Image 1 (cartoon, rainbow, N blue to C red):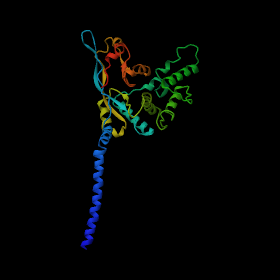
Image 2: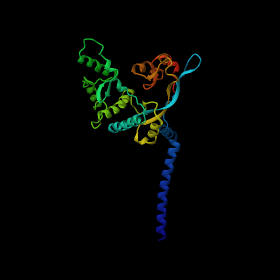
Image 3: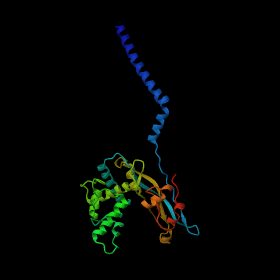
Image 4: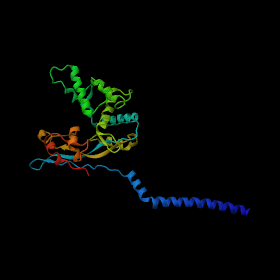
Length: 298
């Protein structure tokens, strides 16, 4: 009986010795052999590069009184995740409804090309003027010029883009060739989704390039997004500086204003550290002194 117990003890001791040796060898490998490599991998998962915004330079009058300054606020940005298209569309609609509920505005670049007015799909502010001032053009020729402008600005080269009316442009954007917005959504809700999807499409929606879709966001919206982060995959809020004009009635045409840059502005400024979603001066002193007023990101 004692021999049997002794044999079992020896077997158990051998098994524990083997497991102990394997555990120690694994620890040695993790800590000593591959320690530096494993540390770098862990840091790459925990750390990411982020742009820290700096306030834009102030505009003063001759007596040093501030005419244009900067104030802190929040922006909403989106990065690409593994979210399926249907889930992404659903999340974006929820996000837009949240912003609208709290009185926050979101960037609506598609409004330059198509829009919805009283439930009717129409050409946007930029496209509606194309061809209208040219005499002798038929409505079909005017529409052709409008469509050509849309293709040129957005970079659409698909041969099956044969739209001739704003309704057909809307349907194409909604289709699987572009944003794949399900037919279960009303036109109004589909357009809300389309506004954000268009911005992501134009600005380059990737996992490492966040796209700003709303600025000057209220604390209420920020709180919901941060507290219910799992319900908004890829969405983040960031600190930003918004322009504040202390007396907007004093020579507004001289001071100028700020707008998100367009494709042409980006081409000329991208080598100076600008990104596609940056806001730049578009008129007056804001425009003329852009390179002086702009402070580089840290």
